[in-house]
Image 1: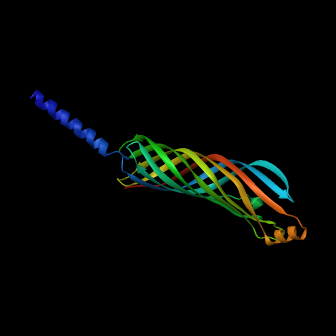
Image 2: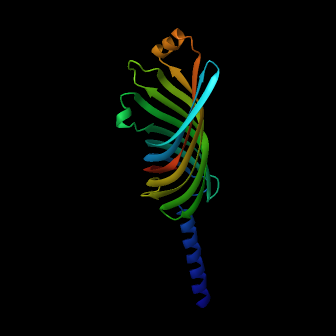
Length: 230
């Protein structure tokens, strides 16, 4: 009788452990898609380099920037603890009220790779830390007004990110996520496009003018969204 009870307890414990493993919110072979919305706030350094008839001058200033962000990510479970994936992020930057007469919009598109380590992996909760690295394209457009010499700035750079995400599942496949991260951008030599008025002015003045922008961002992002698991 005693031996039967021991076997029953052992069998019950084995079933419990198996159920717990099967109930993990993240497992090897899982495919996760996260679609979100968030807010970002950065400290920035803006360096302008003007070249006039082969004479180069530079100036720098610091400022702040903020944006809404729309991230989409895919992750595949390499093990029960480690996932690899890709990120896509669209950023739309806020324009100060005093700049709306001259700036039309500022936006960026990011694409990169990500690795996540899953710290807490219970039945419905998947808490992870992640690091990412990738490329970013930036576009800054001016309002088409008289006297505006600069039409746009555009170019590419790199970004990096490190953050914490918590997925909370309501069912086997659908859940909600919360994320906080620290993110940095390095844009080098953004190209300046002159307006037709600007080109005509420098041509009439017989001036060879070019301008490049180096832009550095770093700051925090917070967001939420929909988590889907297959």
